[in-house]
Image (cartoon, rainbow, N blue to C red; front, top):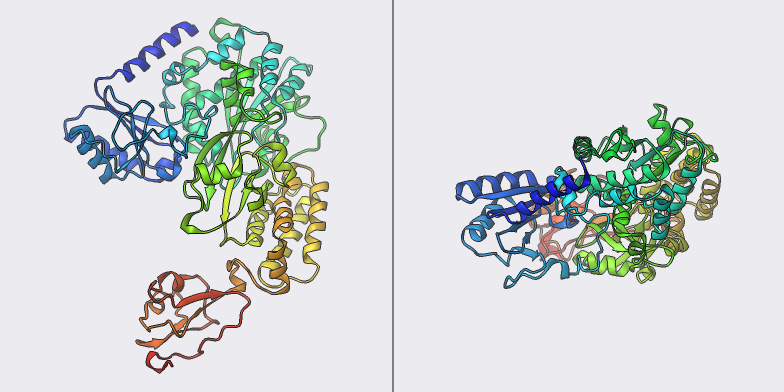
Length: 636
């Protein structure tokens, strides 16, 4: 099928959908939406519209990024702009159908916002709101707006124009366009994409490969998953362009098996591409051949490293090898191989459609374009965002994210996942780009961004990420295998109150040895959370080691719960809720916590009525509370 015929059919179907005389209901059925209950909401919408005699097209879309508001539903009445409703339950879905689709009341009290051009009293433009206004959606341009399982939706919105343009250019011309854009790899290292392609293009050999790295494994990261679920064709089109540019005829998508929905939508997209002549031999009569296979990984974090991934695809154990030679010279089965991650490929398709200069117009001098981040943790509006490089951390956390919940203070932000670092409040006005974060001791990484508040223990955070990287070490090289284990042993002693003088210096020494001696980036970056927390929060380490105290009141071995005698009214709520029966005292008795039995779960603190606030916790402090219950009436 020619591009002209495919585009004509796609635009015809898309216009028919836009001009439909019946209502359109878009529902987010990405993993975040489904986890929040989108399936039940979908059934409620179907039953309520049918029962009310309302004709409506219900359209599945991916994640628009407002994960805090899932399940998310957009309702578009004929001739009107769409209205978004968040945190929709089945009951709420039925209510909206009755009030808006039947009764004409758009329910401003329930609406998140509307599409541009909407004129609803009490409902503002969603794109003008703080959560979306600073964002520039390039990789995520179609997520939440199209049905990812219908190729016509993608094509009607500019899909495959970039690939069509590429076929009219020389291979070198395509590579030069990517170089002009300034695109750097979005998988972590930030290596210039155009330069990487050039190396593979120039490598001798008739058989070359490209790989899409979809082995997203950072704790708290879900950027690649959301893009594949919401717009798989954008990624596949980028792979087509890259394959043409370097002269590859075969490609692989290496994706972790824990992403079943993304795999399903990828398989559907590949079948559609084959049906429309966009994959296989002699694609659209161009003489260009390209075939793609999906390789499901078993969830090993180390397989995100290029050479370990190649070993896994070849059927071996996922372990890295020393470089050189680099994959561009000798990769999959010894042939020149180019590897980019999901987000990088999604940007490639947009760059070839609109041009390298257009993309380079966003970002900073050295960090061009936009970057997706999974904004999670102690923030009011967690979700998936895409922002221009150079935006400040403050704009992301307080503008897009809405700040810290429960009136608590911001403490730090972890960027770059387990390979990144924790940056304190003094960096809130720093730009988010490769150079600035690296100078601070962290990295952009693949895009994980975890916000931490004052209740977070930084020693505990560093221990958590080190536990992850230590368990994910493939064990091939001694610095990573044993160095991270030694570091973790020390961290566990520090957090449990068994730390010794000199432990902090020993952690710093071990960190440098692991960084400098490890074979691959997993070991080379594993110490970053420890190094940055010592660098910026050394006082917390010293409190743990020297005072056997956790300032954040977080480390279980260093805290105690106790009941304040003057505030306890003997209601017994805490005693009844205690799972280990560690609270002593009868009715109208001042209760006492048996420290030997207490599991430090915090249930007593949670259930104590606010009007009493009789339960407290402390660390490293002498507790002057009765050891035996006494009558409330006996208090002075």
